[in-house]
Image (tube, rainbow, N blue to C red; front, side, top):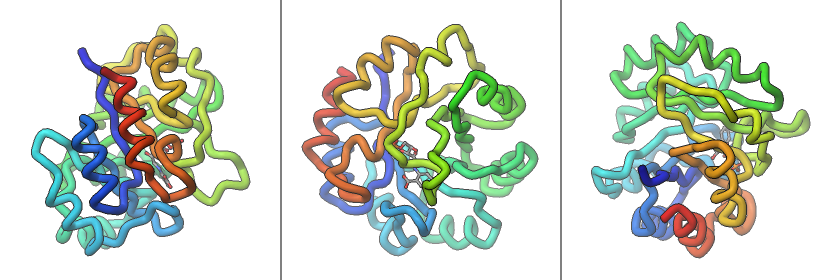
Length: 211
Ligand SMILES: O=C(O)c1ccccc1NCC(=O)[C@H](O)[C@H](O)COP(=O)(O)O
């Protein structure tokens, strides 16, 4: 199976186009206002509508309430909801039932025991994502350009598809895949010239490493 990538934190048509043309399987849009990659619903809507059917549009949320989900989903035709906050398992199940959309739950990893909660969510979610635990000083739970110790994933098996995320770049993604066996990878900072400034060239370089 070819490894598929999610390019996260897209905010404009040129970089979305670069990701789609270079073969991204998933494209991500940030609905966390403190993120340097945040998009407003009216900004995201035309971008998501332009995405071809074979590429999945992922909305990234941090502990969203129903009002926020209703408002954004009324405008933006997302395919998958990525939950990047501290959503408990029953809230994740509620969001999935309420929206009818596949959900991806993110687990922030620094040591082996950080995988344990994922076992409780496995039956409920459609995808898992393993990302690095954010540094204490960060004002966001993801998109921090930090990798965790990928060796922690060795020997683990999961019943749902899972993404490897955190600090992935064109220079390290091949090694990360080799070490972990990941079939799905995610990057944001690694394809930027600065926080929130996606680079079409870096997106193409990253995706070229997967073929
Ligand atoms: O990217 C953000 O600003 C962000 C903010 C709050 C929650 C999640 C966020 N990003 C989600 C992603 O899926 C990122 O791609 C993932 O954390 C990896 O980021 P990076 O280490 O920058 O590649």
